[in-house]
Length: 315
Image 1: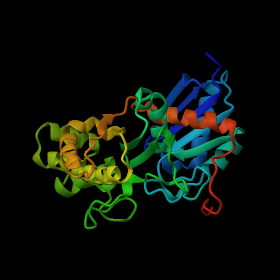
Image 2: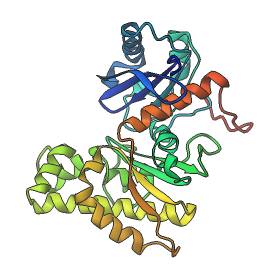
Image 3: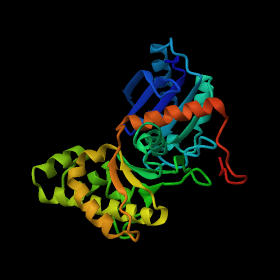
Image 4: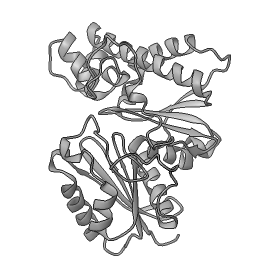
């Protein structure tokens, strides 16, 4: 096995996963550490440096990083991510980390990278070449792979499925709009619905336990989440004609509560006679980290992905 030479980083809502791996997708050093976004990008840099110091025999030649929210893979800029503090807004994480770590690297949306990891070492390795990755976690993100290629879009913001409209009169989303699917089918969305309809401050895990004990309103909230996901995914299927929808993220642990309603509503709304596969990620929490590793490998071979002239956006 070749010497590990790439740094992979996957930043979640409450933690950061870090790994040092090689071009075959093998990790020889890996850690997950608690992380709080209010501390800002410099705190992230400090956390990464400490990890590298603990594994100093593995010197990375490039990094790849996945983070939630709209992020340009062409500039590395975060553009007003709805679930992050303002200290992260309109900042180039690529520039901050390249300067702080003194190695080249690239940044992309976390679910884009989860989809890319799945295409590389998960369901993609078993023949699924075109799929939509849907990851309900703290927020709700999407990633699109067509014919084994990650689709970023003209500006780098493709597949932001979490802000697809379900009901314009629905609950308020973290982005400021009403009725986004994320407001129904994410950890934050479920918690807000629990406060509204149950009158208790519950997170997604606690709501899950309550539903399993037979609480009617808790069970109804999960069914509504399944319906919202079904509407969104059926629209995506009618537009894109993919082979499969692959679900990752923490809310997949509650699939028994929302999955049946999702399938019933989803298949009823399709125009195509083809029934796409509904799959759970083979890689689990490793999908994003493997995608970040793949991004680091690509970063070491080229500078940044090509962006059509005039479409880079404004820094």
